[in-house]
Image 1 (cartoon, rainbow, N blue to C red):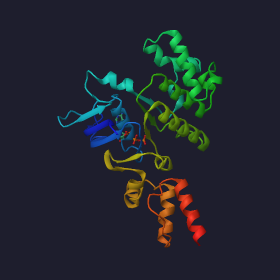
Image 2: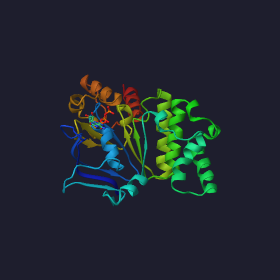
Image 3: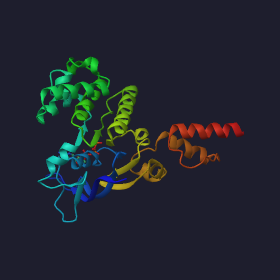
Image 4: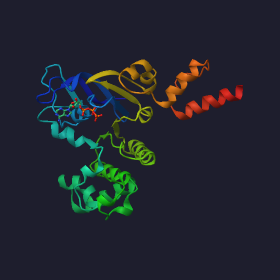
Length: 281
Ligand SMILES: Nc1ncnc2c1ncn2[C@@H]1O[C@H](COP(=O)(O)OP(=O)(O)OP(=O)(O)O)[C@@H](O)[C@H]1O
């Protein structure tokens, strides 16, 4: 599978900061995959997301390269890159501009000069996709947190980006609201061939993605599949994170002599392996 995001030797230092918030990191993200960026508060995750969509420009260095969907970041291409990357932020209240849900979803389309008839068609389609058609004429401020995030996602789907970044987008939601958003994004990922990047403190959510990038103090500590990353329990704890529940449970079972097969990286696989073990006893 081809890469849709490539970072080579990327650093970023905020003005007047004593050290870089992102320190010489390199990684790549495959087209159509789900990547989680995890790390403690202030480790540089949001800065990376803003570098991916060109909101921030990396420190000057001839070795640095950012390529998004085949476009190399430069002054001339930054808008092309921004058009390909949609971000859903943590606080849904800060991202509404329209008086009604429909106006809000239409905003990005208006900016792109889409004709009115086409715009109405797209707004109807994306609101249906996120299951918010019934709220088309509601005021966004009257919606629940989860509904607000679904409208924010509809606004992004409307402009058909190649990449969607969820920057702590589920952190203010209750477990059910969180699950609904994750299920929605998974569905959208498959249907629209989207690449998903989620910045999250929820390590159990990260365990479901295809790739995990662990960031600590602006450095990329490790990357790989959840299995490859979360098996490194010492490192995960050293950077102030906890391994996901399914990995912690496997570690504890191993410690008491219960041997399970490798690569049990989902709840379903773990439950299945435990049932098999139980039937052998
Ligand atoms: N606008 C800014 N100006 C100066 N420093 C900033 C700015 N935004 C972030 N920083 C600093 O850059 C570092 C990385 O911040 P960043 O927001 O990328 O971390 P994060 O991992 O997303 O944190 P969190 O999980 O708390 O959202 C932190 O030390 C932060 O204080």
